[in-house]
Image 1 (cartoon, rainbow, N blue to C red):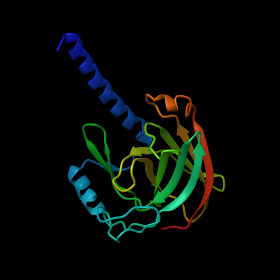
Image 2 (tube, helix red, strand yellow; image 1 turned 60 degrees about the horizontal axis):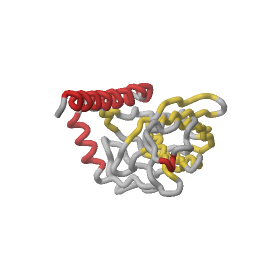
Image 3 (tube, helix red, strand yellow; image 1 turned 90 degrees about the vertical axis):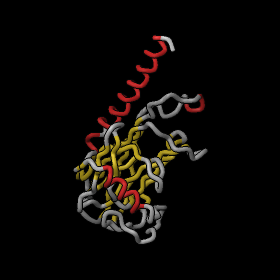
Length: 210
């Protein structure tokens, strides 16, 4: 391998590491109380194997870290230039953030209402759309009660999505606003002229509690 080729490979690995760390750092505002624990992550993964987190299902009744699953609630659905945007409320359970070299466990506080999950898919093919940014704000009666950037996440049960835990002040009607930023990635030509500017999806939902 030539010196030039070696330099190319080294630079490529460095760029990839930088991208990974930057992606996590950009979501820092979404981070809650965390602890480093690979063993805890394994325990949560094992416990989740008994759960079914599909749409509207309460699962088998198993719990994760003492948290019992609740039915999924669809909060919003919209289409933007062929991108299907869906917002769902799901059971809040611990999740792990991996930055390329270490893990951090995020445990939902006791007052967490639900895990907000945003799906971005090609409306025609159903293919998941990665590398976008999602920011969620929730208001009740004009008062801001939630304002966070959502993590890009992967799950065996929910698939790739953007998510974070949400704590609401109680039952009632809320206004949800999602700011979807364009996917930052190379694109094949079928996507060359869509999703080039930020787009906002706004809707209302009623939260009845877990």
